[in-house]
Length: 198
Length: 198
Ligand SMILES: [Zn+2]
Ligand SMILES: [Zn+2]
Image 1 (cartoon, chains in turn purple, blue):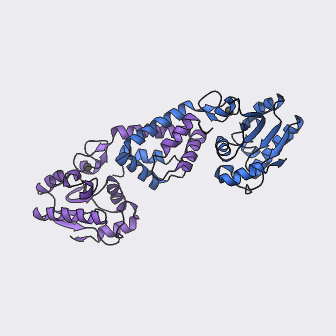
Image 2 (cartoon, protein in one colour; image 1 turned 90 degrees about the vertical axis):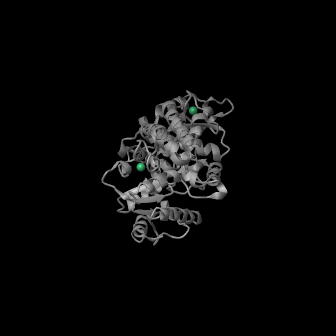
Image 3 (cartoon, protein in one colour; image 1 turned 180 degrees about the vertical axis):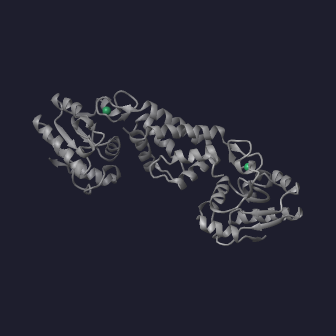
């Protein structure tokens, strides 16, 4: 049995999912094949479609299968408030947890000179272009509260200053060193409302 | 963002995996799209192949993409000892945890009259055919130690008696009410070696 081809390959493939080790992968494979083949086939199709069709929004750089994401394409969202985050997952949690109705900008990372990640790698050119339009009144810096996230917020805050744009930083309730993605909705909503000048 | 089409559909599809709720599914989707698109595509392909190609072994009814599984096709496995289990996952764990070198028979369930699961649903005809060949000297009853698993073992033990086949039951170390699939290797190996007449 140990060399059983396809089943073993499926178990190995399932291990690419975060938090899934060999034991869980084994349970998942047997569960799908024994009790939910339709679900397995549906998941296969969705994975292929998502990988092939989901790219980045032309304006905010979040994940989307359309040229403009839903937020950027929505005329009812407030274009005067721009929330800068590190990842698309942050957009997702902020939109679910808070009442924020502005727009977003996704850095896809944070400044990390040692890893060769500078402003160019984070889409700063695009971000500066948006600041230069004069439409933005407030820039909410919602990068993570890690050392690098703080440094990134500081850097962007300085740039915002040049454009005379008010920069705020979400603060209260986000534990130092924590990552936004793993914080409960209530804490995040509180941190959002308690943002202050940066 | 809440209505974001493809991403949301992918997250929902991931929830078909056992032990995966909306939060984990969300993390998995973002992880694959941000950091491991090759892994996601590979998983998509393996799922489709597994669902389409993996069926049941003609002889023992375990999961396999070939007509005969590796165990049944292996002439070095002892055809005189047949281990009867409830699921393909049990074959997998027994083969990994013990030194058992006989063959298997998979019931795909257990007797459960209230759910309409009788001998016919568990492949008894095929099992009796194998007993009738006279080749089998020992039938190891490795159904789970739940009430229904015990009843199933008892029923098969009676049938084995008619064919003058020795029936044994794995016993020591398997906690009552426990399911084989979730027991550690050491306990399972011990239970296997400590089997007794049934
Ligand atoms: Zn967008
Ligand atoms: Zn077989």
